[in-house]
Structures are given as C-alpha cells and as structure tokens.
Length: 243
Length: 243
DNA sequence: TTATAAAACGTCATTTTTACGTTTATTTTT
DNA sequence: AAAAATAAACGTAAAAATGACGTTTTATAA
Image (cartoon, each protein chain N blue to C red):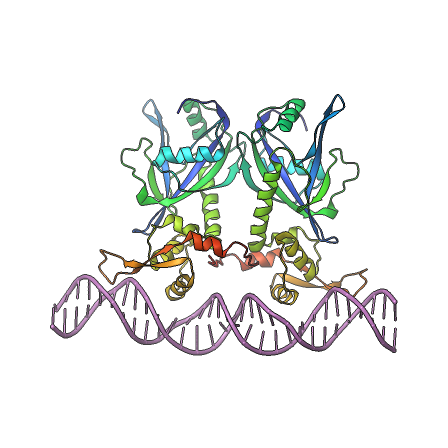
C-alpha cells in the first residue's frame, strides 16, 4: 500500500474473540511502551487503530486495521460510536506518547468492534505484542480506550439479545451448551439449561447436523449450525413491540 | 459565541418531529438554493449540520446545531453513525455548493437524530427556510442526506421496539390511542387496539392521570403519562434473550 | 460391569399473546 | 329529551411461550 495523505481522524477497533474451549470472551490489545533514561514513561495496553486515509471509507480503514493486526478479513464488523471529546487524550502519558509518535490532535476516532473466534487468530510473531485479555479482566489501558471498550461491550450485550450475532463468535458447528456458555459469558448471568435448550432447538434456523462432538471425555453432544438464510426469511417483516 | 477553529469534521442532525394531531412523523429540513445568471444550479433540501469546533465535544456540536435551528435544548439526542465515504459529496450539485460556501473536503460527518414534538418548534421567521416533511414523503435531498435519513429511521424503528423513546415524540399527557398511532406511523404496521391497549395499561410505568381529553367531539379519552423513574427501576438488571 | 457426568428429554403451572366480540360513555342529531 | 352515532374501554377463550423443576439417556472412564 502506498503512502497516502492522512486525515485528522482515526478508527479504533475493539476486537472481541471468543474461545469456545475456555469459555472466555476476550479482547485483543496491543502493548504501548516508552522509556527514556531508564525510566519507564508509558507501559500499558491500547486498542489497535489507525488514521483514515483520504481515499478510504471508514469501513475500509477498520477492515485494514483488523487485517494488519490479525491477518483476517470478512469478519463481523460494526461501527458503534464516534468519540470526539476534545479532552480525551490529554492525560500525561498520552501526551508523552503522542509526542513520541509524532502525531497530534488525534481527537476524533470512529470506533468499531469485531466479532470473531480467538482460535482464528495466529498471534505467533506479531509485531505489535498483541495479546488477548478476558473482557472482565483487562490490563491498564491508554488513551480513553477503557471507555471505548465499555461502550462496545454494552452495545454487544444489548445487540446479542435481539440479533443472531452470537454465532459470529462461535465455530460453524456448535453445541447447544456452547451457545448457552457464550450468552452466560457475555451477559454475566446464569441460564436454565433445560429451558434454553428447548427454546433454541425450536428455532427453525438452528439446524441439527448429522454429527456429534469428537474427542470429548463424556457423552458427545449433538452439533448444530445457524442458518442465516432461514433467519433472514423469518424476520423480513416481523416486529415485536416489547417496551 | 466567539469564532473558533474548525475541524475537518461535521455533525449532521436528523430532527424527527411527531405531530400528534395529524399523526404524522416528520423530518425538519432546510432549503439549499443556488443560482447564477438566472440559472438554477442547486434547489433541494438538506439536513442541518455544522463543523465541529476544536473545543467542542461532538454532542455539544449537535446540541448547538439543534438550538440554532429550533431554539430547543434538552431534547432526546442520539449519535447513530459516522459517515465517511470519500465519494459522498462528489456529485455535481454538491461540488458547486461546496465551492459556493467556501469549505472543502467535508468528508466525514457524525450523524445524530433528535426526537421531539413538531408543535414545540416555532418555524415562523427562521432564517434557514426550515420545513417539516413527512418521513415517507421527502423532497429531493442534497449530499448523501437521503442515506443518512434512511439509516436514522431504520435505527429509530429498531430502537422504539425495545426502549421507551416513543414518549419523547409525544406530549407529556397522551392517550393510549396516541401511542398506538405513533407506533403505526413509525413502523408502518397495523396493531390490534384491544390487545395494544391492555398491554400498555398493564405496564407499571404507564400512569393513568385524573384527566381526560378536552375539546374533542366524541367521548373523551383517558390521559396517561410515562414514568421514567418506574421504568428505570424495573429494568436495572433484566435481560430477555429473544433471538 | 459399574460408576460417572454431561447430554437430552419431560411435566406442569403460570404468563403472555392472539384473535376476536361486547359494553360504555360522551357528543351530536333528531 | 330521546335517539343515533362513534370512539373509548372492557371481556373472553384458545394458543403459545416461559419458568421452575424432575427424570432419563448415553458415552466415557474406572
């Protein structure tokens, strides 16, 4: 990619990755480190982000950022909010960092989140020191990225209740319990397995496969898949007022 | 307000106003007109918007824009999306207009929508030629504002099903049928009055007042109000998975 | 062969929804 | 003053969905 003029706007990406084995919802963060005269000035983590090139859409920027970080394309992506508070980058560490990196007034960022599977990302020899952190056990964060993550997570919590985005975080073939575990991870609640199971199995767009789990040390569970086609057909004109 | 440095970013506002008497959901648009040598070059409507000042949050900008357009403050406001396609302002009319207005590369805009009552806005002697248009009967629109409006409307449709924002569009005292009419306007569906009525009346946060309609030429209806306090208490920790 | 543990199924009371029919209260007309 | 008109408000019963549990099945491991 040839250098392009840079706009005064950036895109930051909250990358959610779910690990179906450890049942852990994670966020991918990169290390931010700066020292001078043997003194550590900055040592924390941040979201990945980058400036928007002039000839690029915002979506393009987000896609590019994810590609550079993980190598992945075609992942679920949602632009959820722009952050433009003029004071958002004025704490001491951030000012130091910004000076060091030779950019300034990075005031406005358009934030995206991605939903993908932790296992799809290969973090061996990545340049950014990118690391997964459980969403409920994050390290110290730079800039206003804690705020951005919180808002992304809040949006995800609401959205997963009304749209089938949960399946973006799961492998194509999953068990009913995988889905329940994921809901419980995201929402931080407990769900009755018997009722959840019945409800999910009765959905037309949850399709039982002719396959079971392999390599488990107890009774292997039935595998299912999600049919986006059927889902889309079912909800073309259905509204349910539930305020 | 003293002049301030301007950022390369704007805020555009989709102002939804509901007229409870005519049962019409409207959008407030301003006229865009440009002629040269008796030839009309640009003649259409656009959303109100303005550049973001350096020392302003995005929310501040939106609030300021609404105030200048309608005189109103403290209205329901939602930032719903940033638009940053580099080609969004490159059609012939927009290029002409941008030259005339002496600003350039207004590529990125953060879009908000407001929910308020049409009757609260006094449009007599407004400078911008602002006019209400029914949301389903819009005039020709400049820039990419048709797209922005469509996305705002889509967001509103989804959001009004799960949050009590509908009451931002209604007077403080309303009838059950007012609420039904509004849902029908927004969603473009028909709702069974008897079931809707029962459902709404049973909500603890819908409070019957000791008042009835006045000045109607049939049996006057009971007036109700929405209690945000009760609503908030009820939904502090309730989740309902409904995918 | 038996014990174990997760997977999967079942039941019943309660609540919510859907699809209608009926009555009541107020205004306008006769 | 009575009657007609009409929107408001209430009612009912079947069907579907939910919530709270108990029970059975099946594959693996001891």
